[in-house]
Image (cartoon, rainbow, N blue to C red; front, top):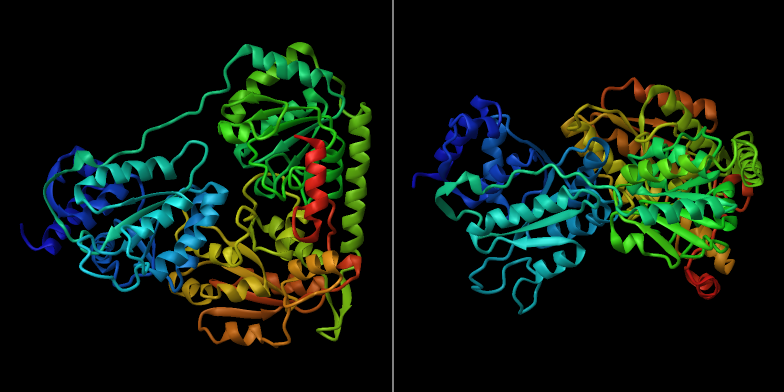
Length: 627
C-alpha cells in the first residue's frame, strides 16, 4: 500500500468531483474496493450516513482521525468545528440535531476529554437526540497503562462506562467497522428514541491499514416508518373510556411533537384539556382555549389544576420524568389511563392503562375516527370541566400580567431597583417572537420561569433542555448557528451560574461566525436552588457568592464579541436587544435581575416534587394513589 495521505487525497478528490459519496460510488468514480485505513473508513462510513459536521477537541488520542478530516475538509466534504470544551461540543451537536435534524459527530481525545463529552451527552440521551461520539481509547495490545485511560487493571473500562450511558462499540478489530457503524446508525436514527452512540477508537487501530476494503460494507440508513397501534378492541376500549369520563386531561410529551393537529382534534372530541412538557411548547398553539399550558412540579396554575382534578389521563409520547408528573403524584383522581407510545416501558408506566403502542399521529388518527363515530361529547365552551379549566387559565393569565405590570423591584445585592426575571424574560420573548428568533433556555431559575412564560403558537420556537437540565447548554447551543442549514439567529437565556460553567462560546462563536445573543440574567446565585432551600428549610446555604463580575468587560475583552449592559427597565432591555440583533456576530447582554422573597419576583410553584424534606409526604401520596 502507498502512503495513506496519497490515497486519502485521491479519494477526497474523487468524491468531490462526483458531488457526494453516493454518486461517486454509483458512477464508479470512487472504486467499490479501495485501499484505506480504519480512520478514513470511519469518515467514509459517516459520510454515507449524511454525517459531515464534526465538533472536535483533538488530542493525542485523535490525531490520526484528525488528519483524515483535515484532508476531507480541504475538498469541502466535511466541516470541522474546533472548540475549547468537549462539553460545549456535545451541546452544540445536540442543539443542531434538535433544531434542524442535521446529524453530526463529536470527536475527543482519550480520558478526560471523552469523560467531559460523555457527561454532556446526557442531554442527547435524556432528550432523545441522535449524536455520534468518537472517543480516542487505550491501545489494544495492553503494553501497559496508557496515559489518561481509566487507571484500572481491567479490559475496556471505558466501553463499560459508555455502555451505561447508551450504546457503545470499541473498534479493537478494524474489520468490525461495518457492525459498529450499523449499530450507531440504528441508535442515532432510531424511529422514536434517538440517542448518543459512542464509537471508541483505540489509538493503535485508528491507523490500521485496510487493503482492498469493500465500500459496500459501509451501511446506508434505511427509511423506517412507525405503524399505528394495532387492535380494534383496544381502540374501542379507549373510545369508551373517553366517552365515560367527565374530566379528561391530555398529557403531551416529546414523542407527540409531530401530532399537533391530531391532538387538537382529540381535545374537541374528548372534551379534554391539554398540558404539555417544556420540550413541546407550541405543538398545540398557546392560544388554543383547551391548552392549559405546561404542567408539573414547576408547571402553571391551570396546568396543575387540570392534572390534579382529571379523572381520565390520555398520555401521548411522555416519559413521565419526575418534574413532569410531580414524582408520580400529578393525577390523584385519575381512574383510567390511555397511553400512546411506541416504547413499551413508557406506555405501561402507570397501572390501569389501556396501552396503544404506536406512532402518536397515526394512532390518534384511528382513535379520533372512533370518537367521531360516537359523536363529540359536548360542544366547545359548554361542559363544566371546560368551564372551570378555562377559569383557571384566566387566573393564570392574570397572575402573569400582574408580574409584567410590576417589572422592577429593589434588590439588596444590587442596591437599587432592577428587573425581575418574569418581566425580563417576557420582554425578551415578545421581542424574539416579533423577529422570528429561536430561543434557548439554560438550566435553573431562568429555565423554570421561561417555560412558564413562553407562549408559542408553533413548535420549534423555544428550546428548553429539561431532560438533563444541563447548565451551559443554551449558550453552547448558539454555536450550532455556525453550521445550521438553514441558518438561524439564536437568543440564549442564561443565568450567571450557567454561563460561567461554559463561557467558551465567547471565543468559539467568533472563530466560527456564530450568530446570536446571550441574555445573561445575573442575580449572583443559583436562584433555583436558593429558592428550593428557602422553601424546604427556611435557610439558604452555599448557593450564592459576593464576587462582583463585570461581564460586559469580560465579553468586551474578546475581539469580535459585542458586549452591552441591558439597563434596568423593559425599555432599556429592548434597546439592548435591538442593538444585539443589528450586530453581525455574537452579542452578550448583561442584565442584573432581582432575587428575593417578593412573590412578584418569580412565577411560583404549583406542583409537588420528590426532593429534600418533601420526599416522605410525596412518596406517601404516591403510594396512596397507587398508579
